[in-house]
Image (cartoon, rainbow, N blue to C red; front, side):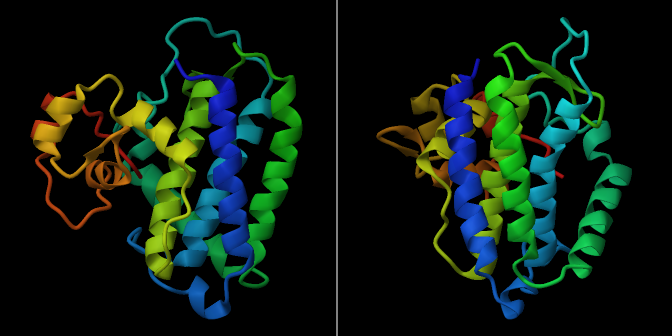
Length: 236
């Protein structure tokens, strides 16, 4: 179980940092390629802001009468409908099209700020047991869905930082959330065995996160990671 206040703190940190970066981008920077081919910085920024907006979309649908079969934060990232080739293609094309229509380089930053302003005004009034249904039909606790938004912002924050040639701005709070999603209760010693450089004094490091999410130059034995209990997420 994730604590709502901890998740929201991580979300705030990621949004604020990313908004600041996006608002300061130049026209030359927004067309730089990213590892999320075929997205450039502008398209990836648009996608990342849009992923946060899906929380507002879900909240606007009202309170679904769902009490069983809830999808967890880690369970959201399974290779089913939401990450099918058809859905991925629509996701990719939609972000490219929206980015092409941008007014200027800073537009994704302004959009992200507006989304967060609206969401920050909604979250305090939502109870801890609030349930939502995602656009792909997943019934989830709102807290768990917010965890997935931290995952999106943190991982794509790494993608954007790498594309821009900058030091990552992702926060320690986001790392704590990612640790919970990716590594759960994995024995640190077992993780250290399969990822020797990925475990520090506080547990799995950003290097470990990069390795298990395909954001590292080092080859990893995914079968060994899975056997150790690491959750290998399907990411679109």
